[in-house]
Image 1: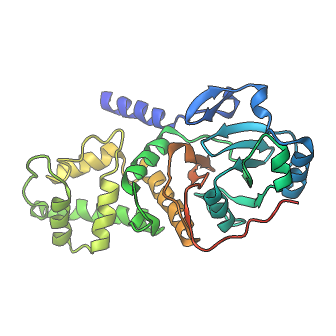
Image 2: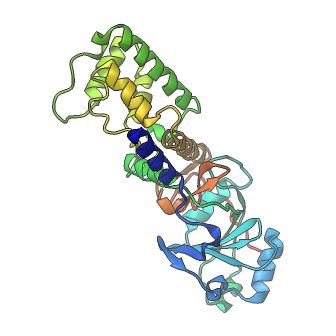
Amino acid sequence: MKLLLENWRKYQVMMERINELDSGKRFILDSLVEVTEDHNETGLSERELSKIKNWAGLSGDPSFLGRGTMGSAYRFEDKALKITSDAREAKAAAAIVGKNHPNVYTVLAVGRRDPRDVEESSVRKIFVVIYEFLEYYPTNSMISVTQQMIAKTHRDKGESMYYNWDPAYLARMGKLVEDLVQKAGENPDVLGAPQEGYGSLRPKVEMIANNLGWTSEDLEVFMVFWNLDYPSGGSNRRSLDSPENIIEFVDGADLLRSPIAMHFHELALGLTFLEQNGVTFADLKTSNVMDKNGQIAIIDIGKSAVEGNPELPLIG
């Protein structure tokens, strides 16, 4: 009972959000800062802001959402306006205008400010991105998943499996776990000898995969999900030493229903969607994800490698 309550508390913490819209705080350069009315000022002239609102179909007054190294974002009811100096972000956003995906924000329009407006303004950033406003900040589990994905894709050029992710992989992992539990229960010898030392788990998994007749793709899918950091699952180092250890790890991590596994799957699908649309996004950060209808979604796709040269029309 004590372990059950402890795991439940960990689960509750993972479901908490890192911020709330009504908190009065916003992220500025990755720090959560108390905002004032001054933050709602875009720095654009009233004339230019009116022109952008007409062009993008924006309504209402600007409400500050956050600021990074390259740009600032503002809410206009159900849409958001970002003013940025990042040409790669603008081109990446232009590549997915009007394309919907549950794990990537929907970009509605991208354009360039008139050079005369820039000259007359205190804001020198020339690119404008309009996208759907996402109300909910990510949960702690979404942040954990993002950090784990960052570690796996660090310096990746879009060549790993996370940029070519199959929507069936999560269900496939479920079948692999079921196969492992059943066959290890029938014949523990398929697990081989207990692992010694603190080396990689991969040789052990390769041996088990060979004994169970798994494909090389099965092996890779299993390695990804089994090696995720589950807050209540404990270490996986001895998890494959016996049928009992397997069941204890799977049950403790709630592996097949864990928000960690589901959000990791969603994040990989988002990276794959971008890659399929000519955008290799390699600047994933915890400030670049939000909650979109209960799923993790990538936003702010700056510093991307973009195929072709998407058009960036002049506003107005």
